[in-house]
Image 1 (cartoon, one colour):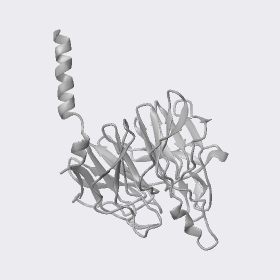
Image 2 (image 1 turned 135 degrees about the vertical axis):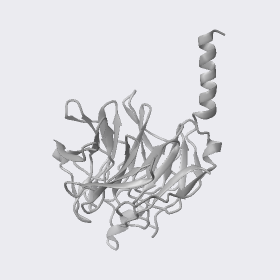
Image 3 (image 1 turned 90 degrees about the vertical axis):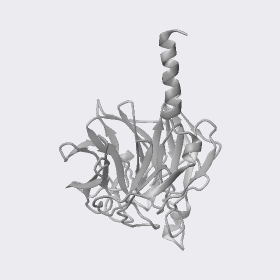
Image 4 (image 1 turned 180 degrees about the horizontal axis):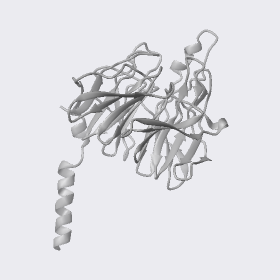
Length: 332
């Protein structure tokens, strides 16, 4: 064995020992409430993203300030308010900008989709109205992800909580500021978050909020989507996994952790938000159940930081709510 190959072997061993999280370790993970200095503004249907190792709570129903959590000091900081009401979106971070794409504004149940992309500059605490979204492709509650300097928008609903759930798939090129319509996803869904892992985009959870009945306008709470769709950027094709989400919910959060997708929380037709933690192995495509959340919640995002998963705000019950707490999922 040469020196270089020997060094590579040692590095690989160290990586396997210290740089990964095995499923056995994940089984030892537990959710715990984080006792922070200060607390964020209560909100739901908001985004939660990491920028420069700080956590940003953005948007939610009403016009809210941005709350920033500093992991090093365990403190919450208050920044400026959003320029307008924006909710039901998944924020995307690219370079020095946080993008808001595929969201809504206005009151339930006839919320309107955002007509433009909005850009937030964290270092300046400044907002800027971005490129217009094509009128016939506007919707909220959609999944938004970044892949190779382009924002991909999938699913969503056109007309608030009334009608127009879609399986649309679009691409926004940040460099050219141009939109492109792509092949529709296999299943319509809204109220969900998408995620990219390597060269694939995954759609997990969500519902068809267009479903209503003569006896119940809110029949859509039962119309959750169990199928897991994914798009392969290398083949430019959509696929549906054989094994669906065991407990389907809408507005749950998802994180990629060591070749697994950890999906947790969400809402359905039960009165309280779900607290289950469901784990999908991306090699075997099988599901496992992990430790439940302290407080079930939906309508917010999640962050991976130093092999731990953080979730803050959201709603603890079906429909609206304004949680101010934060939980962390890490090895016990």
